[in-house]
Length: 103
Image: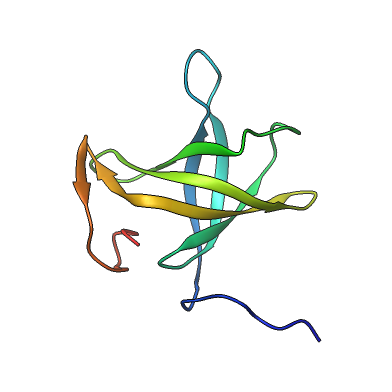
């Protein structure tokens, strides 16, 4: 049996989001499957190749994004580690996990 190495508990959910590769690249729809203070599991049907880092855009009221590092990938899922704090409309927010997905 594989040991769970997560540093913080994950919260299961199904939440729409987008992967932003930057520049003129298209944004890719995805679904947050679970989330923790340090990262998330995303379901996506999209690019076979992703860069090591990208922005995850959350589909909620004010524009919210998280800088992510790709940690693992399977056929339809990826695991990401959050880098830095959440960004709300250009301002940094550093509180803990909450209903607003600010982890």
